[in-house]
Image 1 (cartoon, rainbow, N blue to C red):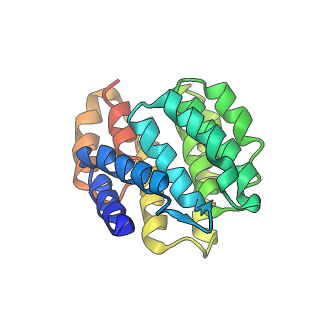
Image 2: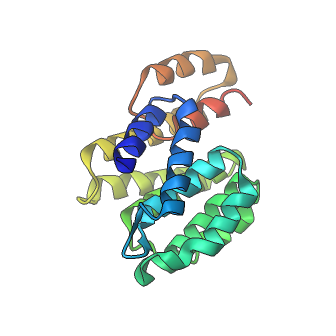
Image 3: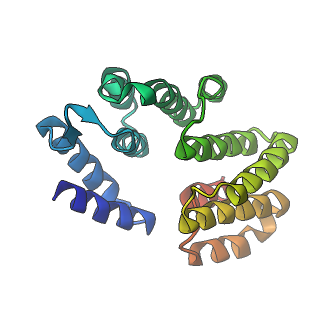
Amino acid sequence: MFQYAINFCNIQILQVREAYVQEAFQLYVNGLESGVLLSNGQLSPWHFKNVIKLGLRLKKFEWTELFILQNTSLLEARFREDALYYNLAELYYYTGRSDEAMLQLTKVEFTDVHYNIGAKVMLSKIYFETESLDALESLLHAFKSYLHRNKLIAEDLRRTYLNFIAMLWKLVRTTPERYALLKEKMEKSQMIAEKNWLLRMMDT
């Protein structure tokens, strides 16, 4: 029942219904405290990552850092190092420490598709925000190629990230005077990863 409730919240979050971020976070916390979301005393790396993402969106930065450091040991040994470094990178990115985030990403081995995609998205954001446009262009080309080549990526997921790449590149090439048209197009689409971030970049 916890998993069904979490899945429902996740669907609502994908549709940019922000109230469900707190709901999903609380479900995860209750599920972990009660042990319902543990399997043989271990925590799924996907649950681990989702709790952290929700904590960061809610700006619970101190709580999230403590959660990462105290609960990495609950993961299977093969997931621990990548989970630690990747999620610390996310924390550092969210708290404005881009250099530290990139340093953590250099330690990740990227044996998992989702960490690989997440790292590319995080670097894309950092390069855009720091106006490192040559590095961004190179990364987006590599990212697009990776999405097309990797057969382990579900088609819907592949499409959302290809749309992210396309929209980010349009944002780079669009003048602020034309943001309103791009924003309108973006708001109508349900299949864009990091949609909130893209929209926020047009408001700064």
